Length: 163
Figure 1 (cartoon, one colour):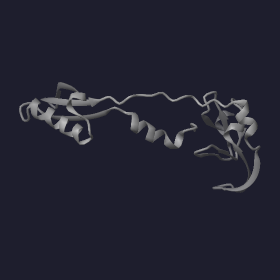
Figure 2 (cartoon, rainbow, N blue to C red):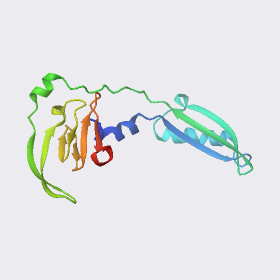
Figure 3 (cartoon, helix red, strand yellow):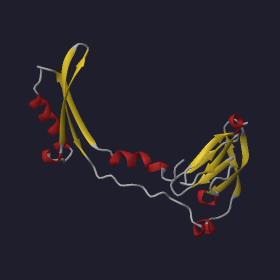
């Protein structure tokens, strides 16, 4: 589990380049018409034609020559800062506590509940555990263990497979 897992998919979708592609068997629709369709689709997303990189390719499919026109608009790409945990953050988090939790196939078990910042890097903690983060909770069932790596990502390991 990454610290920003709940929004990671949305982040990826919002930073991927925008592409539109139209293709046709050669001779059925002209390159000019296909280009017009690509630029129309880009305009519908608020992107002006002069901002679109257009590429034309020809290829064979099932013995027929095809033509494809693809338009690309590159979005600005920003990097994510790796969320290291500082000593100040770990001293401010509450310590672990025990809560009764129902685990399918195991019934109600006393379960350790702790803040993700309280899990030291590279230290393995066997389940059942609930690791709370600001935007999500990582569930570590019985028979599994959790480790926080140097980048702050939580990694689950099956204890049965590691023996």
